[in-house]
Image 1: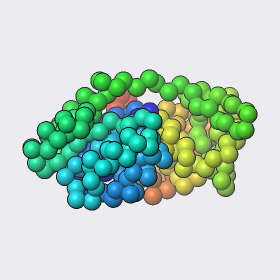
Image 2: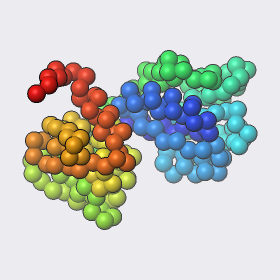
Image 3: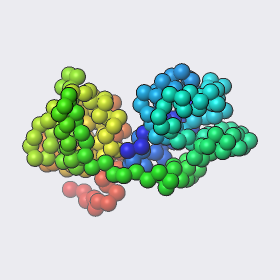
Length: 240
């Protein structure tokens, strides 16, 4: 999974990036505002592989920003620069950015840029997740995870073979690190969309593996709609 940070205040630009990003299962996107201290702290803490940044912003000294990342981080992330000015394209080349996108962004220009990045930095598919507790390392096959349920500050993993495995981290931690096949549909649940056998909008439930009824809420209805749309693409739909 590639973690991408969007550093941009313009909501239309962010929306286009995130909309196109929904088609890239191996890239997760986090939006933060154009604030140098907050952006630097986020990058040093979370170590994203890709940063899409408005290099024309007055809120960040880009040269100083890059210098500090190089000074304190073992691996500098790749940068895709965005700007209103074509003249900034030369700056992006000088700063060794992987690409430059001229604003206003379009879906096509954004898609080309993300594809260009993916081609140069192919992602190996994540097949397992490691739950670490002190000196205990437990490896779970991603495809065997049906859903995750929050239990106070811990998380329970429900497996296809009936096992229930606890992890000493919050659901939010796993929401940000699991592949995009896992989506949050409730404040207490993350589900594996590959295991969904039914979505019942009337009862506000998703049925997992023909057995487990998982509630969803209006807060996460966009994720439910996204799952339903993706599952319907290669499905023959009939009306009863």
